[in-house]
Length: 268
Image (tube, rainbow, N blue to C red):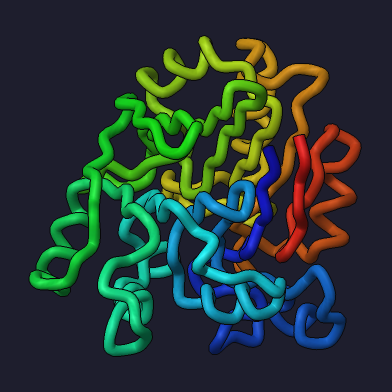
């Protein structure tokens, strides 16, 4: 299996659209891995995770074709992960297709919003629920409950292909007991974990700062979910987290963690 981190930024990206924060200024000056579009990913070029406002740019930048998608899997309805206007371009009159070439998997909140927006458009949807696995094209996908939104079943994802296991977590917060209990039975070959707040913790508990990231990682190691063969990568970094790419590397690489960046392809 492989995963391409198409975007590794938080809700407003890096550099942030309307900000002179230190991290934003650094990114404008130094570019490279400091530039972060809104978080999204692509598994084996066919399972698309989230459809945010930067999707078109990410696909063109990496030379990809959305017609290769067989599934579009949403994690939750925040605007940096769910840009429903982008769905219309998959169908007539924007092209000659009468049916979307991919299946939509999303929680009830997102499915309802899509049906309200496109009541007569032929999207095939499956409503996802935490801890209820579904199969698609040889993959088993299990949404797990994120500690991110009180009014929505926000998901992180466990994706398995019979050989490898991926644990993908943006917008995780510190998981609640049912999620930890589920993960005790999972051994991940690759962990993608958010570190949104990095060195600048806030009172909001729906994202991880660097201390919480370290704590979550240590607990995953204690449970055996993360082991010596697990590749560990970060994603969903905010400019408000006060960490440039190099500063994040300096803290995380000694802990065996790779700092994710836009466009990286991880094989496992």
